[in-house]
Structure formats: structure tokens, C-alpha cells
Image (cartoon, rainbow, N blue to C red; front, side, top):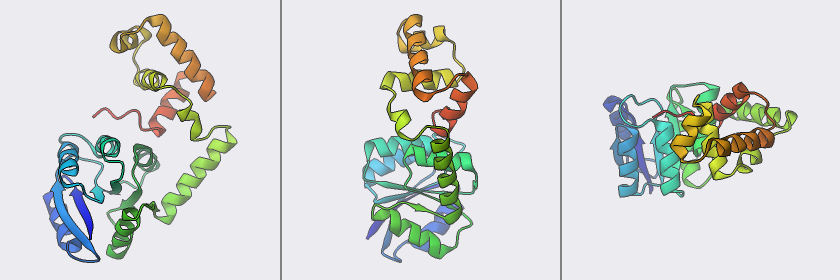
Length: 217
């Protein structure tokens, strides 16, 4: 059986999905959560194979932040985003956060089941439109001379500095928060710009958004 955890802030949605999925198509709903914090707790407690994750949850931690933390703590657990947001930014951020799939709440029941079964076996699942968008993004990165490995070329400290810079903090504020010198911050910023082939701050902000670094949860 595929152990499934359902995460959504609306109890009606959770109940409906539970009734729709539990005990059918080799799926067992082992738990529910109303926000990201509860999702993280339940995931560690129940060890589900798949987590059906909503993104927009106004109370507690959001779906993107929860996905990132769950994948860090439970890398073998697949997260399938189930959302109302048919939007490139949400799609890209969910994939960057570690989600194995992205599917809309308007999707037919049969496709939802297929998506759960797919990610449970270690595969990714995207509807054709989402696949097209990701391919367009990938081809655009190639055309611009960048690829997914570029981000991995940054050191952990450089990634931290990039996040603070993108959020609008000054060199002095970044230095104080990371407990390093202003000169060191400037050096990191210079290295980041060189590695990513950027010349302006807006370019860094846009890049950070696509990498899911601007989650303020």
C-alpha cells in the first residue's frame, strides 16, 4: 500500500480527498495536516511514501517551506504538490523545493491517482503544460549560457549571502546576521555575480525567486 499524508488548510478538501483516495487504488491515507508545521511533524511521525501538499496555507508554515524541510529530513518521501495555482513561479519554486510532482486541484480523479502512484515509485509527475513550461525554462537557461549546475557551483555561504541580498538587506545587515565582515560579504557578492554571470541586483532577485530562495515563511 502507498502510505499517503494529505496536507491542506481546508478541512473539507482534506475530508474529500480522504474519502476519494483511502483504501482505493493501493492507497492508504495515514494522516492529515492543516499547515506546513503540522505536515513536517506528521511526516516524521508517520513516514508516508507520498505527501499530497497544498501550497497556500495562511496559518503556520507554507507548502514550499514545508516541502524543503521535509525533503531535507525525509529524502525518500515524495511530495506531490496539489494546488489551485496554475502559475510558472509556483511551479518552478515547487520543483526547486524538491517536489516530485505538480498537479492542479481541477485535475480529474484518475490523473490524481496516476500522479500519486507515479511519484510513489520514484518517478516525477507533471501534466503536459507544466512539462512544456519547464522545458522552455531549461532551453532558455541554455540559450543564456546557464544551467542547473550553476547554482550548485555556489558555496553554502554564497547561497546564504545570495538569499539575503535578494531580500533587500544591505552589506552591513548581512554581515551582522551572518557574523562576518562587510568586506567578506562584498567578496561573496562579487563571486556570486561572477559565477552566475550577472551584473545587476534585479537579475539576482529574479534568479533567487526561481530558485525558491525568497520564501518569507
